[in-house]
Length: 596
Ligand code: O2Y
Ligand code: MN
Image (cartoon, rainbow, N blue to C red):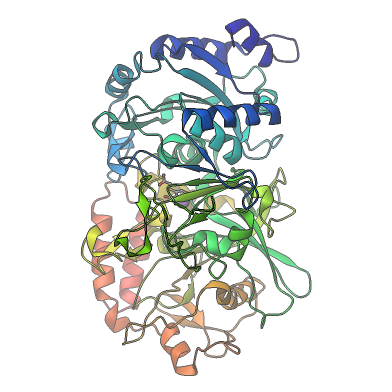
């Protein structure tokens, strides 16, 4: 499509193109030198056409359309299978504004380095202009981004994960207030790969990767790193949190958000199926990964899911662990780096059905279950429209969001940390979030059991100094007048034989029941040095294998074993030059309560 034709698509009510968009696209076209520029309109006709183009180009393989209608398979380059945190940079003018937990590059240097790779990199290729909205169309809280990319995989995934196409021009109008996202595959060489964020310019440049969080720039790059920076400036929060509504047997729905480090079951909790023994409960999914939170006129915190789809980890997703996700991905979904079965279906480890006798693995090679290698990559993914989720909340697109009664943090801990506890107040809850940590699970990633700190599960996603981020949490707490209660859960506590004490999955609703009771002002609790834990009879275990002594162990807070945790926190906080005094005070007070 030529520039003139494109201009017609992005005209405002007066028939004039958005001059800011036009100028920027022209500059980026001059840099990348594509053969052609295509402006996406988001229509169904366009989806069909681009899908055929992608199949013809080898970006996608059609799956069996009877088994999985509208579903396609993608295999990424083998050196490009996950977010590359080591190549992800926050490019603020002052190095100290990126803080000690981010990689930093000076903006001039980052533009120069990436610019040299982008230069001429789209020769022989098409540049796609993807206008998109993060958040519901028409919501005053939504943000517009425009991604330029040479990847059809990115175009088609962005179409599912965001509100993409002409709808975004309506939201943008004549404004210059949009995130400028430039993405290019270049030669997919890891030595020439950079994911650079320029929060002060509302700009993202990502080059050299075509995968997930590195390339679908609306997700982690915009909706967390850039939005976090904007949120601090504008007085709201961008968090790595699921959002879910729990309807009780009386028909009252209470909304909660939850932040867990990866591999702690966020998507599973977002789509939880209540166990048969908890009659009358319903769970309503609002979002599985990201929450944008604002203080409403009523003084409560209100949450919006900025995304339009799910980009979930495939391995471990099964009818047992997450039946709603399995039902969501039966049609109109993409699968990346999974096994292709001989019938043209898909399979992955932990799917809880027998593997095919023979299949094609994520590398595109013939694979058998006895080959000794995994068939699907451990970070293989499904992309699916949120609208297909059976548990999707009828309020998931409410422009004002949903009111939040509880915020839950969590980590994976074999011991020390109880199944659930409630913080004393907002500043203590902020400290609880700031001290989220998980144990390493695989030897290959480092020493098994070693604690990895991941404040608010935001370590890889905080687009500015994490000390300033903690301060922003504390300041938000001063503006909220009807505070959500803040909790911490640990589904992974083990007995002395190394067996999990808590059944997890749908049974987690029993813990959430107590959380909801606490929010409603009931729910029996015992005060401990780390917060309130449920009284012995406050969590119902009828219908589970959890014995009374298991539950006592799950809820036990033993001050005598907290010392290594507190020492590890000392060390972690020690790296922050901008740690708020209130966090230091909470840490000191908790040590004192634990007699450390
Ligand atoms: O590896 C990637 O590129 C995807 S990472 C991801 C995707 C969906 C939801 N969460 C995450 C994450 O790393 O937290
Ligand atoms: Mn995530």
